[in-house]
Length: 347
Image 1 (tube, rainbow, N blue to C red):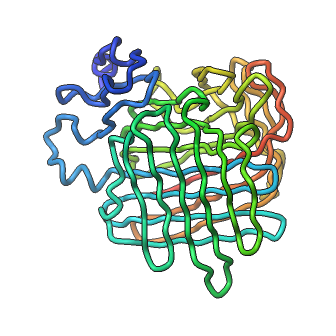
Image 2: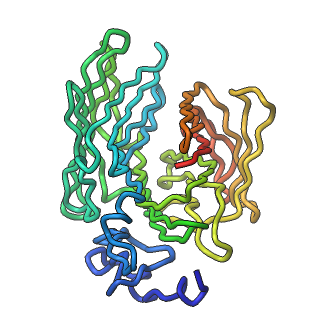
């Protein structure tokens, strides 16, 4: 892709603070860069192409998920659409261990919305329901509702959470080309209130302490895909602080999906390095940025692995839950809850 094509975006549109005025694609031209707000319509398939839209759809991977940060539990959930297959996963880890559930459904059935505000995406399949209820405006009150029945070897999970958009972090909203593909992502840390119940144990979420971090993606991944990714956040006396950071192949000179969340701001970040202390699967990791604004150590507590090997496709994936300590733009963070993951795939 030529550099002039990468720069063929409307600067006023990228910098707009008015969500209803922002689009990912304008008159068939994909916009690249960092947006101040989530585009009102984030459908990459609106881009003009000689390849039919239906064929491009099958290459598009879309997901909307949340990671929950609470002092007593770690939890994550996702609705994901590959168009030939759709699926969902959820886990909650507490002192009793890891509780996990998942479902596969017909490809294309989730209809993940490219206009997020308002929308109500959900999965409802055989005793497994996860539903998001997005308000009309980003600054509204959004909801997560989960009702997953117990299985023979896994406890039930119930959730009823409200997310306060008016006190959320600054949004990370990035559109970037990838070598052999393209990426759009939107991430926000929301103060969360409500309850999470796993088995007979109920945890109260306090919006002055606890967070739900959104991870939305619309990405055409290259056939061989690799990344390292981490995220964490917490509420300090001055506001939300944390970071989202990734190490993956990129097109030189383009934006990465990395940022620092500082009170009231989302600051661009790049050139991230991940270093593991040893080959132990639960060894600590150190993550730093080249400019020194991010310098944290991740201490894992638990790990889940997924491996599939097929003739033309494979996945080697892990995600760890744990805590981060160090500095974010000079702000000291101590034992903030977060996750770290690795993906190596042929898709």
